[in-house]
Length: 76
Image 1 (cartoon, rainbow, N blue to C red):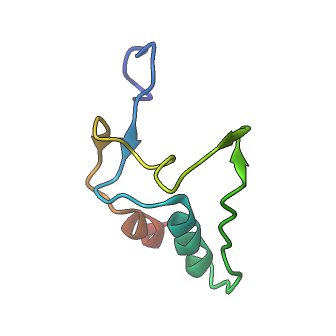
Image 2 (spheres, rainbow, N blue to C red; image 1 turned 180 degrees about the vertical axis):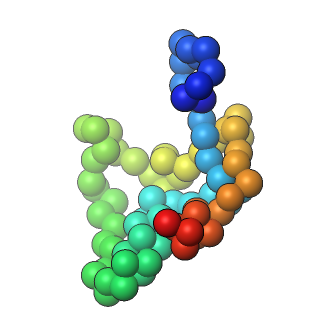
């Protein structure tokens, strides 16, 4: 997407697995060796908008990569 011609729209990009934002955060925290709990606040807003569990998850139209986030994280 970064090297393609402008899409003039939204390009949904994700990995082979769907992760909720809290799950993504938990993976990062664990990778760092931290034990800080990730707390989900259902009334929190994202850029002013209420979100659901699936709001920040790629849709069915997403371009999916082959690398799982946990594998990418382990390599970096």
